[in-house]
Each structure stands twice: as structure tokens, then as C-alpha cells.
Length: 162
Image 1 (tube, rainbow, N blue to C red):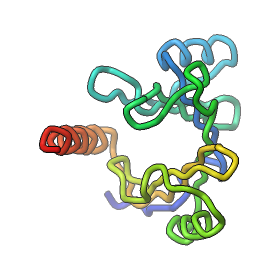
Image 2: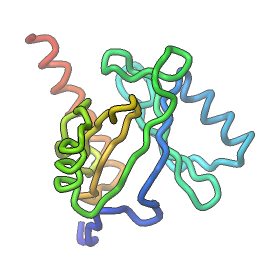
Image 3: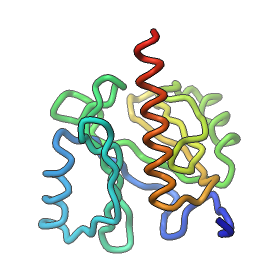
Image 4: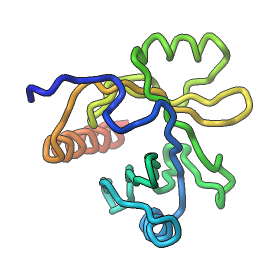
């Protein structure tokens, strides 16, 4: 692709709420009906669970995913944190070091992800989840699907060999 990569994707604000729910498909339908949300995209993982959905409500984006207990990701009905906040920044490595230096605990290491962001998750000292990211590569939906399939196949292979 020849598009210029900007660390904060077009149309995003610096902060974006990211909900973890039990029943992402039902939640999407509810937010569409109740709040007029538009579904901009969604990606399902193995087994059909939603690993990422992106909704637009007015001028703001909302990220949403199913619970993934195997990765410590629980919605409020299961006693997890109700929401995490995603922060898009110009320099995610610098922001990551600042957060860790301030006392945030790593929940998912910062690394290049299959969807084109450099991304990681931390918990603040008060139990809230934050994800930090910068866009590093612009990908077509087909490229993202292919990269997702490769990432999950690799994870499954590592799981079996452990």
C-alpha cells in the first residue's frame, strides 16, 4: 500500500472506550437499536467469538469484544473491569515506558500486532485496564484476515507444544 501511515488512525480521538462483554453480538445489536450505533467492522476468532468490533456513535468510536477468560479478559457480569480505555499516541514506545515507569503493570506486552498497530495492555494501580497503541501499517480487510489467521494458527501451535 502507498497510503501514509499515521500513528493515530483517521477518525479516531486519542481516547477510545473498549468494552468487554459476554455476548458481543447481542451487545452490538443493543447499541445499534438503543444508541443508533453503526457497525464499522468486526472480526471473529476461532470458535466465532468476537475479538474486535468497531462501532460509531455520533462522532466517536467504541471498541467491543467478547470475554476471553483464557487471556484474563472478563466483562462486568463475570467480575471483570467493565471497560478499558484505548489510547492512540504518536510514539507508543515512549508512552509505554512512561506508563510502566509510573507503576502500570503489563497485562499484554507491547508488540507489533496482526491488525497493523503496535499495541499493548497495562493495568493501572486502581485496577483499570488501558491499551496503548500507534498505527504502524495500513492494511486491507483481506490482509488483516490473513494476518489474523496466521497469528491464531501460530498461537494454537505454541499452545499444543507447551
